[in-house]
Image (cartoon, rainbow, N blue to C red; front, side):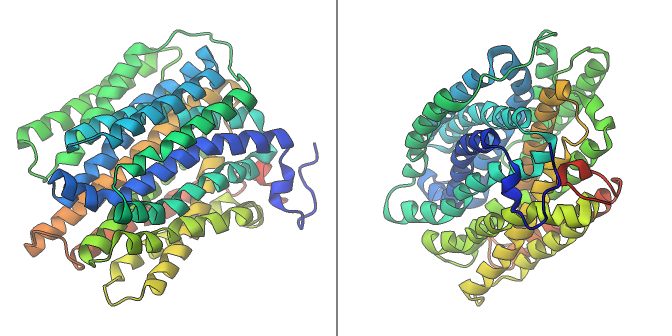
Length: 476
């Protein structure tokens, strides 16, 4: 197959018809998940008032979902190979839709958290299994363009999420931000049944149940501990016990994985240079960026006193910028290479994220929109690069394991990002003595997460200069 067509030819033209169809169908699931995540972020202040909870505490509605993803994602690759990608994908969409219905029926923060965990269980299978189907459909030379085909339709969710969420909260009730998933879920189930192939690999090993137990305990305990540090929501001893229990469970998993022939999370994949850089550098970057969907709507509505609609019309700029970037991702990576793009772009993205600390009520909406638009453009380029680079050296038989491990780390990073953003905001409140966060309290939080994202730059420099050239068609 010729992988070096004329440079002027659009990147999307390099993908086969089957790859494009598969990517767009999988993107329906991404659309539903991303729409749900951005809609709820905009609605959190209103939901906090409905439940009688402080707005800062509502970040548990985000982290509980992300934690559920991180706990169940490790099993996704094995389950897809055992029962077939189509069956698992279809069932996952159904579970996610059921969780959405339960969220709409929630009458307390505790009920909402449990419903979000159900949603997360569905999303844990829905997203990585969809990505796995695409990885097995596309040739390696198509991978960067295929990721663009996958994520471009999915980005419509974040673009629509903030304004749709603000509109629903302002003119209807917040419950409808979950009920809108019902028709999308039904459509997704139909498309999967009609078009998605039953992709699976021959099973040669038994399910690593002990690995799921250790990894689940590790992630659940650590995230509970991180979530409650300095928040005064549980006794200090319980927070310390959770952190200690998570650490011990992680050590047990590491010892278990070393001696297991097919561990649920194959840590041996980290010996692959490209995969390791995509995991570690990508995690630092996602931790910084992961706080943005929580902090920005909170700042605009609580700190600046703007309505949910006005907040949504500003915050959707991040996703709009990401949508604009997708057609140029492969050209940038082909011209400059993964190493230079990911290291330099990390600094630009961190600067744009840190610039949000300068926002104030006096800023015009257009200026904030511009900062978020450009920031979303560069962040999306970074994500596209990491998501493609992770699989550059992974052989086909280990693709399921790579998808499970990478997706687990990805979701955990976003969860940690929300936790760190909330912790930084809480620290600012403590230092200022404020009960409700004001404009100045958000500055510290944005500086912290911006510095975290900048740490991805030196780590990205560790990859070889020619990393991923077979995926971009670069000629050096």
